[in-house]
Structures are given as C-alpha cells and as structure tokens.
Length: 465
Image (cartoon, rainbow, N blue to C red; front, side):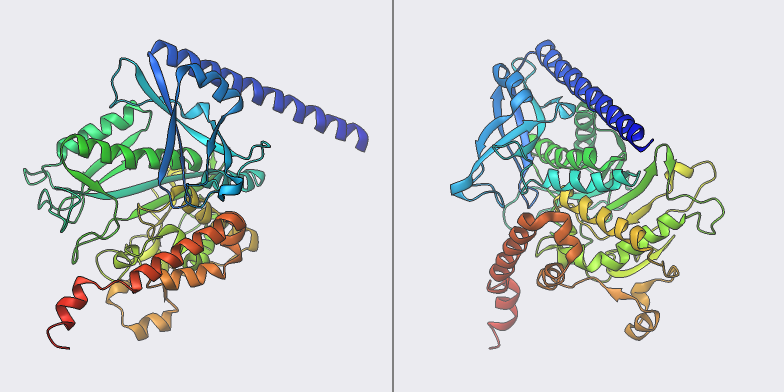
C-alpha cells in the first residue's frame, strides 16, 4: 500500500513539473511574440545588489531567445555584495513573467525590460541575489500552504534639484487639492506610466510634508510587489527628471518635517481564503494573524537594519513626525508599530496588518523576506499577542511606557546593526553570504558617518570652543 502511494506521489509530482515546464515555454513564446509585435530591439535585464540599487545591462532582440533558455553571462565582481574578482562569472536569467515595454523610450526600436534571477555558472541560484532570498522565504511559506501578499505605501519628495539644501516645489499638505500642489501632473504621468507597465495603482495624494507625495500600489504577491517597488522607484525618478525636477526616496531629507515611510500592508492567504480573518474574534483576527503580529513585534528590533538600512533612516525613526518607533500594535492608533485596519463587513479578504517602520529606501526583496520570516516564526512558535495599545504613545511618559512594557526600535544604524548581527532569524533568512556582506557594508557606512564633521557641529561648537 505504501509503495502504491509513493508511486502515486511521484507521478503527481512529475505531472506538475511537466505542466510547469509547459507554462514556462508558453510564457517564453509570449515574450518573443510581444517583442516582435512591438518592434523591440533592446531588452534590459534588471536585478539588484544587496543594498537595493537597481542594476542591469542590455541585450539585443537577437539574443533574447538564448537569454530565455540559458541566461546571459556577466561579470559580478563590481556589484555590491556580489562575488570576488576571482569568482566573478555570473548568469542572469530573465523571468519571462516580468517582460514589459519601457514607456518612456521611443516606440520605434523599442526597449523592454525583464527582471533576472542570478545563477552560478553551474546553474545553482546565486546566494548573493536578493531576489533569490525572497523566493526562498516565499517557498517556506508555500510549503505551509500560504501565499504572502503585500501592499506597500512608498512616500517620496520632489525637489528642484539634488544639489545642496533641498528646495521644495510646493507648500501643500496632506491630501491638498489646491494650486499649492504643483506636482499633481507629475503624479498623474507617473501613474499612467506605471499602469502602462502592468502595475496597478490604487490612489495617490500629497503627503503631510511640503513637496512630499505618495502613490499606493494595489497589493500583489510579495515577489511581484518587490519587482513593482523597484520599477516604481525608477519611474518616479524618470518622470521627475523628464520635467526638470528631482525625486528622492531619502527617508528624512528635511529637518523638522515628516520623513518618508514605506508602510507595508501584509496578509497570508490559503488558496482564496484570508488566513488572517476570524469572524468570531473581537478584533476579527485569527490565531494565525495574532501569532504573525506577535512575530513581527518580537523580532522588529533585529530586522530594523534591513527595513531601515541607512544612517538617515534613523533621523526619521524618532518620536513625533508620525514615525512609529514604539513596539506595540493597535487598530486606530498610528503611533503603534503595527496597525490593524478596522474590519468592514463583507471585506474579509481585506483583513491585513500594516507594519509602519520600513522606509522606501530599503531593499524590498530583503525587507519583505525578513518581515515574512518574523511573522512565520511567530506562527511556528505560537507567540502570544499582547493587548493592543490604543492611547497615543508619543504622549506617554517614559515611566508609563515602561510600565506597559512598550519598548522602542533601535535609535541608530549602529544600534540596529548590533542587534541584527546577533539575530539567528535574519542570518537564516538572508543566508550567510548576504548577511555578512550587508553587516560589513553597514559598519563601513556607520564609520564614515561618525567620523564626518557635520554642519551642525561647526555651527554649534566652532564659535564657542
């Protein structure tokens, strides 16, 4: 009997592999057909380094079929966090599902792009590829029956240029619909460009700070969304450049104003069912959702260097300015680290949590991976969720916070890296290669920062010391 079941299992697995290969072949055929119909002459293969900077190189249409089958070789020795010069040969294999025409390039002799997965010459996935890190973490969720969906809100600023002191374009405020919001047309063109690349947008608006804006993407599975986030950042900058201005995702470019965040809505589904929803619970949260939130809260300190990875990130993560620094959860309280949007009858599938500390300058592949890993750890270990904190934590005294057991996120990149360095969860999620390369890079960044003589120091101390 056992032998028969084993044979059945092997047959089912074989059939699945055949169907998977057939689907891939169909996707490749569609890419070749679409490229021919749209007069595509060049295809840019995109990927990221460990810090989340977009990299890429172009191939001609004549090389496309070979690239889809075998990938394209390149030298990875100069890519941050990639290989040493003596082991630099890499293979970039494009993902056919990500083929899109680039709208801001000419339609004649058009240019397209595809995200690529990076492989070793022997065909094994490259351990320094952030996209592979996310795919590997998603595979763990998939083995438990889960699909991980995310919907990030990426905020950014428009300035007159990238030189010197930032010069704002407007003095508009949150949701302003006045002539003060001179960037309305920039947002409009950005949205049209994103949608032309197959990226669905839910809404856009002016944010709280002067010249600050937000375009929210419709939720998608985490791998697709990480690709979308990389595309979004480039499109925002390209459209700004076209109009002679500069767009930045720097977390805190203006002193005394709100910084830019990447509040990340997330949920787990089992098939078509939202695993976070429970109609009988007072918060409409399932046991899975509660343990997931508890995992995010428990591991939030150690993953912060990944979700807020720059020295400047910690100028945003300070009390006030709507930045969530206190480790707690709530439904309506936006001073909490995790917020659970209120349930609306008939909207069970919209049940989700919102992790509010990440900023838009992180590497989305790594950020989504550590968020998911923290949540899954909570589910696996059955973490207990503490009661929600609905009071304004910013207004609480330190004594009151201590009494409630409300801790804070790390206050600097150095503190964050020290916590990450001790984290088994982050090391396991990123893999040794990226884990140690990332920490090494961030320690160098911190050393450069702490030895720099700032304008603040010269202005404050030079006249009196």
